[in-house]
Length: 359
Image 1 (tube, one colour):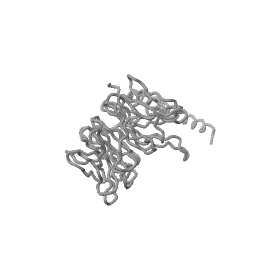
Image 2 (cartoon, helix red, strand yellow):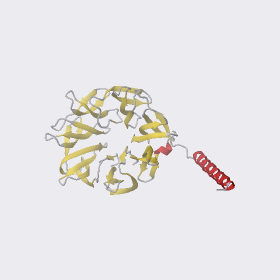
Image 3 (cartoon, helix red, strand yellow):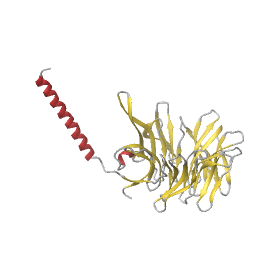
Image 4 (tube, helix red, strand yellow):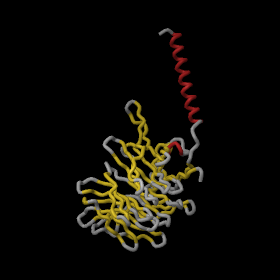
């Protein structure tokens, strides 16, 4: 190739590179302002601090690791800061802790014999282990503002049944849809419980257990994981997996019946944190950046979804530039979101609180 042509080609390549760099700089300058301010919660110095639930008072409950790998239950709010509530890892803590607006905490911990048991923790009266349905174990998955707890517990033949518990009536079996097992996931302040139950044909269907109307079959749950939630307006949001590698989300109310949302996530997308404004979070499968067949980076996709207003990708709304990992966990009725974030070259995953800028 003649020298003049080579010089001309080099100049053209340099100009193209400069143009691309300029466009990138302009796009960064024109990026919309963040919609959330961020607070990094304290830790116990370990690799991971995992928030589980936030109530409307801004209290966050979760699990924090120490540098030696031990795990502790923590409670945090802006007024009283970080409080260590004791060990959780004997055995390793299963499931999710929940907290209501009264500051009561429900979760699962080992009893003196090493069997997992659901518990209710009131900071004024201490921890109370719940019973079972005749078996050895029980798991708590939801708690409402009236102190009612839902989950699932073993029956004498080792199968698991959904339950609801309160201080007056103790633990009550919610039954199944003709199959051997059922699982309660969430409960609202009216005592309506949502979850999944196995049919006689060994399919899992979404279920609403209503204290006034009994058991309502909401239809085939598709493929797992089976996730759902219910708010105080009676709106149910649930995941509906398919064999196409995509996840669809459906809502249900008594007035409208079941509706499919237009929002679609990857096959592992799950809903969480439904609030009384009908907003909910979606934690979806990570996307991958590849070069020459090698995975350079994995990023989880996090969305705030509104059945009436579309979806918002949360990574783009946080004032942190180099996000390596962001997982959203829960949100409250004020629109505050809790999650886990790893930024830049950090060697740990932090618990974070995201608050809408308008507040």
